[in-house]
Length: 216
Length: 261
Image (cartoon, rainbow over all chains, first blue to last red; front, side, top):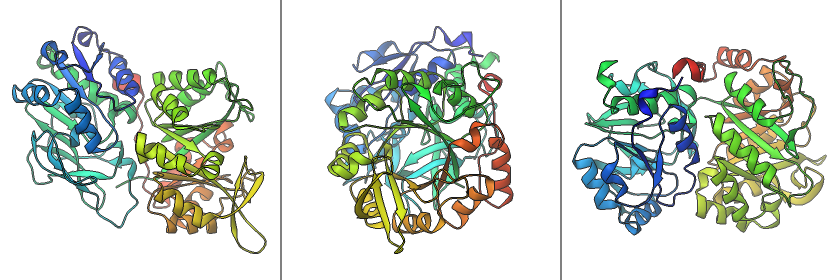
């Protein structure tokens, strides 16, 4: 069932020209929220929750965010500890720098580099991988430790030692799977493509920040 | 650990699933979206829709199918059939498909692969290769639904499509397709060993052991099957349990949307 508490939440899904947002929009709708897709900085002012989705290359992503003058507004939004969820490239873009196709400065919200997955396995890392939870967080409510989520990426966030990493997946390296710091969360996998447990991630995050999360 | 995937495939003609389907519980067994929803419910890892409609002038039927699928199915799905330009690809991706697959169009104009990869990212470009092992042992690429020989070596072509930006290869053996007698292990292994990207074995699935062989012997990263699931005689989770018992990592946990949300 979708949760009626989410209906009044002002959820903004950032559109920076990265292509398909439809599955993220549908996933957020499926758990009971009514998201708006926006591409202007002003949209962040009134948002209760901002979601940064994304596929593709880091350089394109940063170029698009700069072009829409979203870089500073996103940094300020996160610095104010307002609820923010990054997905896939939306996680990688938060790092200091990405080495995908050169060396590209990113949003520098999370310290560390985005590096190529180690050789010796098929790249991209594509498919359902086991996600090992390092500590309990409301983001994982109702999700068993070791549940599988759908990944598709060739670069990953090299920050395994960080306390912000709350879940990892094994793919020749400890691939950062979920990061959480304050009211910022981000996943390397695609929750909107990871079946029921993936939708549960969206639900948990939105519920946590609906103002009613603590009363459950 | 990354699991191996079972991919369900539907051939769709003018918006209807072809090949006999006999699921009693379906309201409309010919509706690809109903079937996709059922397969998701039963534990499939991924889906492929191949549009085999003769005329591709009217794309609205396919777009409608893709949009309705994206509304209800929250696992990855791929759409192919008659896509000839990066604008064709964009239409499918914007409608909600996660990946697109191209076959004949890629052989006729290989630049299409790089154009798609550059514009949308390699992760959503699946190149389908239909190949036949000839009597002299060579492995030749066929196009036009497996009807037309190209004179191109399958391994060389697989290597080229990856260089051009394909993120995945869907490999169908013309020798084994339709026989339900097992995948083409030597072909699958030769291609999988030759490329750095994931390879989906296709053509010949008749039971769980065939899928086990394609992965352990053929070194496939995923197995595609159409007809064996369509009749309900091989429940998806039963097949997964057998594969797991053979030592293959599989996604076994399974939850319904309504139970978890």
